[in-house]
Image (cartoon, rainbow, N blue to C red; front, side, top):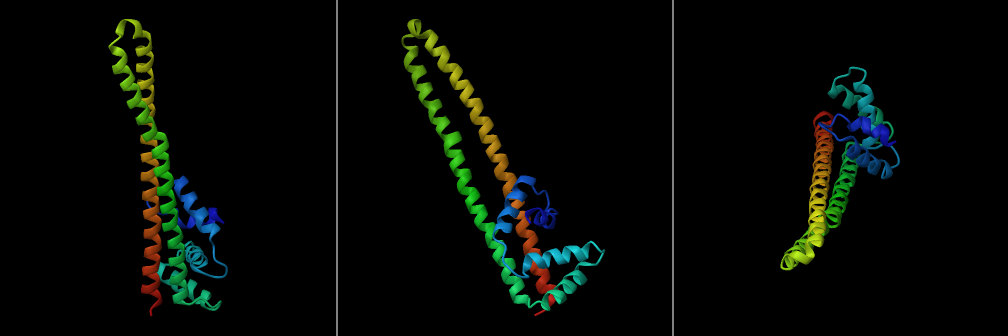
Length: 185
């Protein structure tokens, strides 16, 4: 089901494929039973593929859904439910990202500081410790390069996720606005 959901939200501007798959999996795993916002959105999308204008697609999908007991209130409620699922996923992602930064960047920064201290200490005995100092310098250089690479990778993943997350939320917000706009009180 998450592949079908990806198609529904793939138009989100600049959506990152990996982040979108992750978010759609969360929606799929928390899918409510019965006809709700997701099924409504699928119906609107199907009608849109028939070159139907947005307002008519919303009204037609709702007319059909209402025969199955869906109300405007229930439609908005379930859209909010799925929106909350995505907000929780953002919180989970932020926690995981923080853990990765702590283990992959901060810990390595501390390692670099320890190595630099050892280098300074050993410089006092330069003649007998030259080989050891050269080894530590190589470790510092390698670790700093690794820090930059990991930091850049994590930052890029964060930016892609946040952009995709924001785009998907905007899509849901627009749908809620359209539900209110096109389906009346």
